[in-house]
Amino acid sequence: MNFAPIRTRRVFEEVIDQFREQLRSGSLRPGDKLPAERELAKQFQVSRNAIREALRTLEVAGFIELQKGAKGGAFVREIDSRLITDSMLDMLHLGRITLEHLTEARLWIESIASRVACERATEEDFAALEANIELGVELLKAGRLEEKVAVNIEFYNILARATKNPVLILNVQLLMDLTTQFQRAAEPDTDEYHIEWRRRMVRLLRQRDAEGAVKAQEERLQRLQKRYYALAAKRLKAAKGGDAQRPESFPVGS
Image (cartoon, rainbow, N blue to C red; front, top):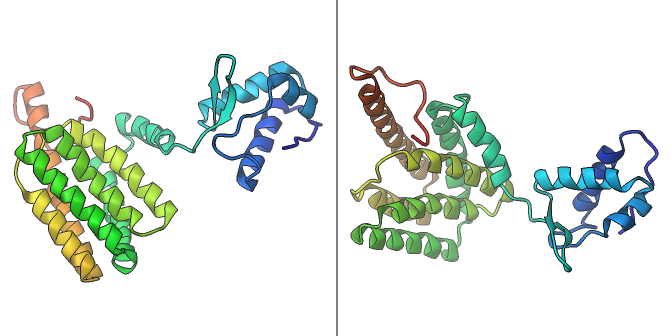
């Protein structure tokens, strides 16, 4: 890898821009170790302080990991979708994302995922979905409800992976990470609705019934939203000691 000398005043930003370009071009890949600070400063023809500032910024952005020790240094990281999730969670806690926003986005994106999965899902994908369902059954019978919730959510990530589209997969994963925050604030389901629903979804996918799969998604999300609102209203009423109107947002993390 070779970096060009810096000719502008925006020194550390220029370093970052070149790093991003190397990443986009494939010259840098996850796991690669960057040269030492001294060597980077020499290639860029800037001060080591400018290099340190750029590396710290890249670390905060999640592009690199700085490791200490004799074998340490700056290593290129896999892009972590949790960085996007964390920003969205900040908006969620600040009330800028409501339950309606999340449900609406899930309906749009999961409907697309279901339609595409109906066309592209393979027998391997169906097997993964069915294995997920059976694991959920085992966890429900064992009373391991928190683990069952995580397995339920993973079902939708598996469904997204059946589309073979990385952008769609990433979007569904982001929505599932946000949904997890709502799930943590709710009492885990102890009925078998989600199990039966997932079995029905797999049947519809196998039949390549896109319209049926989308209709099933709408039904499930409407049911889920009503459940969240019922819990939120109950908590708001308990907090106020009286009647509560429908809350504007769900008490995430409460």
